[in-house]
Image (cartoon, rainbow, N blue to C red; front, side, top):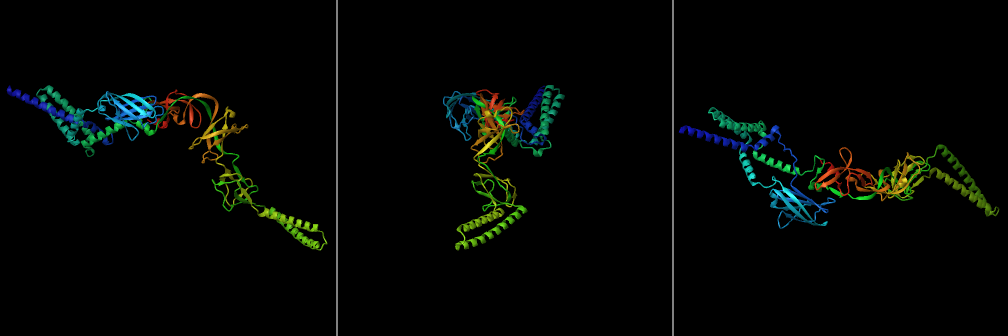
Amino acid sequence: MVQFGFVRAIRGLSFGALGAAAILVAALLTPFTPLAQAHEGHDHGPAEVVMGPAAPRVSATSEAYELVGILRGERLLIFLDRFPSNEPVTKANIAVTIGDATDAVTAEPTADGAYAIVSPRFLSAGPVELVFAITGDAGEDLLVGTLTVPQEAAAMPGVSTINALRTWVTSLVSPLWQIVLLAVATTGLASYGVFLLLRRYFLQAAATALMAVACVGLLFESARGHGGDDDHADPPAAGANNASKNASAAAVAVDSPRRLPDGQVFVPKPTQRLLDVRTEQLTTQEAQRAVSLIGRVIADPNSTSLVQSMNGGRVMAPETGLPRIGQTVKKGDLLARIEPTLPQADRTTILEKLGEVEQLISVAEARLRRTRILVEKNVAPQSQLVDAEVELEGLRRRRQVLHEIRVEPESLRAPTSGVIASARVVPGQVVQAQDILFQVVDPANLWVEALVYGEIDPATLGQATATTPGRPPLDLRFQGFSHALQQHASVVQYVIENPPANLSIGLPVNVIARSGAPVTAMIVPKDAVVRSPNGEAMVWRHQAAELFAPQPVRTAPFDAKRVIIAAGVSKGDRVVVRASDLVNQVR
């Protein structure tokens, strides 16, 4: 009996020791199960980042300031902005009272325009009440908020020690040896279970079978992750480092901008600073509605001129050369010469006339000589000599005119001062009469001509602005309108106030002209209105410090830079007026 009891004790001891060993091996190898799954299919890339809750943060607002604090370990980053405009406040004094502490901690400015405080209190899980005393250029203010430190972010030395010990122990075994050890443990447990079953120790046999099944599961996972890929298996230490890097990447990705299921957009304060997001608090004001017209830039009729030839001919360049496009000229400057081209019949007629005049000049010269002799001898009166001289002078002038008609070129000069806007000639070119050879414009005097269709009364149009692609808006002054329709529209002309130097004649523009009775409405910049995926106009409301909500609106034109919001928002709402298109792209 003593011997039988001793044998049972030994068997129980063996079972306990083997079970403890199996449990220890399973516990130590459990951390490698996720790593084995990560290697399935020979995929050694980084783990997929799963978006979770944002980092611990605290926010508080007042009429002057908006504050957001983001916890990073035991360091709290504080972002302070102006409440109406979301403009960063980088020069302020912030004293923070943490919990029930008697002394406040002064936040230190950082290089990126934020403020930071460090406290060991942030390593303890639970809510922490924070009081921010702010002194800045917008005045003094006192903000109160509660920071909730989650259990995951708090320090847990016991868990860290166990994980470190587990990582160190399992790092001594390579992935291949893990499979070998699991196979040996599984075989041993299965054999021992059969032995216990044959000895009718059913309870011990059932426990041993459960441990064998667990080892089979671990063996299956390890074999699936590492089987046939031992050359690519990372050592446990490297796997631990990769897991740490993936955890860090996940922590960074949590605070990235993202669109929430309800359509709102979460944009962290650091990202708002990067995108330069600005807001505006809406107020109502009296404004006059506007209409949109299609127009183009034209030259001032009083400051532009066309250079044409009266008779046509061959173009001859002056000594300084033909003027180029963009060249500045003054009134009276010689631009080109036109050598007239005469038909052969006209040339023959001119030659005949010239010969006839030459003959008459010869006869008149002979008569003058005879008359001069008679006058000297007092045979003829002095009046005959004068008549002969006058007749000869007239014939010589007729000959000069005939010579000029045949060889004298036509001089083309600038009618007004300005810049050569177009030049359509080259030396030697033959041009016809009234062809436009040059256009001279004054870039400081330009107009806009627009067409008015429909029921809009041109007489009610007032101040206007014009927009052109890639150029700043143009201020326009109403000049007048035509009382005759052109293409079923009235023509309205505006004077451009201080036109830019790079403005071209004929450039199409979009004219926003004031028309109608004044109304009370809210006016926002054009950049604040974006398009939703279904094409409707909307604005982004600054719902909270880091939360933006889409709001469909109905708009009407006001001028080249702003629009009227007719419906959709209320007075006091904060809407994004800068970088709204970037917020709209967050997915």
